[in-house]
Every structure is written in structure tokens, then in C-alpha cells.
Length: 429
Image 1 (cartoon, helix red, strand yellow):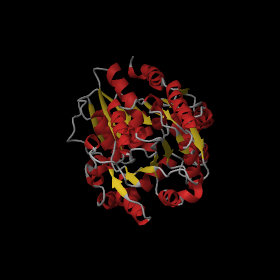
Image 2 (image 1 turned 90 degrees about the vertical axis):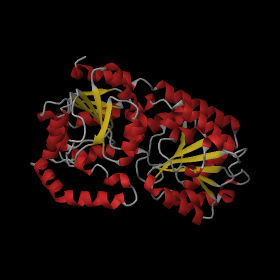
Image 3 (image 1 turned 90 degrees about the horizontal axis):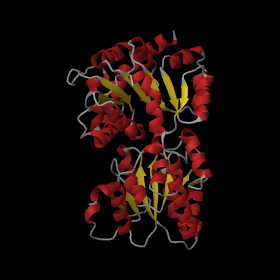
Image 4 (image 1 turned 30 degrees about the horizontal axis):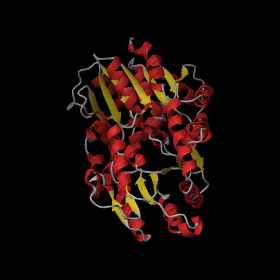
């Protein structure tokens, strides 16, 4: 009954959802492209498979899916891979990662209405499906079971907060998760919370993000970018979210009062959402900082030193370069109660991390990084600048954190192999 009510609600909000696409498309044209796919229209795409289906909603999930996608292509050479998304930035990231792979096809997953889901499943007839991390759509999950498509929740995480919200639905939540062929959890805590919902088919396979290997070319370009800052230290503020930048800019403007004689570093500011690039650039300029945009640079031909107070990272798919160009990184989404963002990519290139108090979406990875000496937690933007000043003034401590970061990223690898082994029975291997 709850699923019926949920579907009726979708009927009501579908026109609003389409209007929202048009509204967002004013600033980000990708939202108004391929709208038909969101309504289950795929006739312009090849249907011939057999297909293995991976759903990665946006940028973070698409990057996390990279080692899994590559492993599936290698392990199942007679299959093609269908990579679905919900956001244009996720689709763009997938194109950057797999655009030259002829066996990968990208499209949008339809809105979660039963008949749209049936169109999708009937058109592609995937041999199996994998939803990344937290993407649980009731009609998609139920429709896959009815269509005989084994569906897995992969790299799955369920924070205590999300568990409490989900548990309120009681048997309905348990029934929805029971439609999965399996849940492959990141951590023991995630697995325990899924099991508390009544699931039995839960395995702990680890976090695929540890298996993401930064592209050597990106790291090399990061080192070139770092050299262009000359003798200045570089602090990255990566994946910042709306509401965080004012606190960061205010604290940076008060650096002398907060941090004494330690020279103020250059700030490499990378907002998480591309539609906010212009807004954040204007905000920094209003705060009195000189700003240089990555989009106005040719990193391969930097003729003059970078003298701007802030370099705005207004590009997609270059996070490894930004981390490699930095001495220290703050990972955003954590100053405000937004749950934090992925710190593993920074550690993988050997850049130590600072985070704020709110990291519930990446709780285990963050606590493990802190315990390993790769990360430190701060309470607010002022403490962030003070902690950065102390580390940037202490070469020995910074070098130790850099080594701990690389070690932390390395010892947790192997989730891809464990995930592939868990999927093998359903995939016929």
C-alpha cells in the first residue's frame, strides 16, 4: 500500500519534476537534454546486449563505480555495460571516464514510476543490476525483482541517521530491501544496520573508493600547478557546499588574527556543484580576494607565477590534480550538517586532510583516516585555518601526515575483488 501511495505521489509531482529540469537547465543545459530517457523513451539507443547495468546517480557514485565497471568489462567480455545516472554532472563524469570504451552505454534512469521502470527493463533486459551506495528507488527495486533481474545494492552505506528514517517505515522498508538479490556493504556498521531492517543477504565487501587509482597524468599536472604557486603553501578547500564558502572566506580574511605570523596560503577552492562556480567566484571577489579561475588557465603552459589569493577550481574530473597541487586539503560538506564528502581521493595522492564536525555520510572512512593519522577534525572554519597554519609551519608533522595518508589509502584496497566475487553467482560465473 505504501508503494502505491508513493507511486501516486510521483504522478502528482512528475510535472513539477519536469519543470524543475527546465528551470535548472537555464544555468546547466545538461538538465534539458535527453529528457525522454527520464520518461522511459530509449528508442534512440541500441538495445542489443547482453547488458550488465550499473546505476551511479551523480559524480561521486560514478567515480566510485570506475573500478567496478572496469572489472566487469574485463571479467565479462561478451557483455556490454549500461551506466545510468540521474544528474548531468554524473553523466559527464561517466563520459570522461568511459567515453572511449565502445562497450559502455550511458543514459538516464527513468523517474520512479512503475510503467516507466517497466519500459526501461523491457528495452534493455539487463542480466543483472547494481545500484551504487544509497540509490534505493522502491519501484526500480520491485520492478527488477518482478522482471527477474537480480539487483544488488553495491558499495552500500546506511548512516545511523538514514537507518532511523528508514526504520520508521517498518515492514514496508524491510519488504523493499528484501527485493534486492543482495546488499554489499562498505563496513560492518553498515551491514549491521541493513540486517536490523530484516535483511539476510548482506555481505561486507569494503569501499570501492579505496580502489580508485588517481590518473598519473592528473597527478603530474597537479605537480605542475603546484610549482606555479612558487614558494607559497597551497590549501585546498574541495567539494565545498552551499553555505560553507562564506565561513571559509571570512576565516581566511582574518588569517593574521587567527594564525599570527604564519604566511597565508593560496586557497584552491573547488565547489562541489558546477552551477555554483560563478556564484562562488563573485562571492570571493566581494570578500576582497583576487581570484583566478582554472578555466582561464592552461596548466600545461603556465607562463607566469600564480599570484591570486584564490584559484577557483571550476572544472570537472580534475580533483586528483587539485589534491596533488595542494599541501593540505579541507574536504567540504562537513562544516555544516551535510554529511561530508569523500576524503579517500585526497589520501590516495598523499595529501593530508582536515574535516569539519559533520561526516556522517562517510563516518567509518573518516574515523579510520583520523585513527591512521591521515586526517584531523576541526570544529569550525576558524579552527580549520588555525590547524592549517600549524601544519603548514611544521614540515615534519606535515610529512608524517602525508605518509599516513598514502598508507591509509593503500591498506583498505581490495573491495573490487570482493564485490566481483559476491556478484559472480548471479552473473553466471
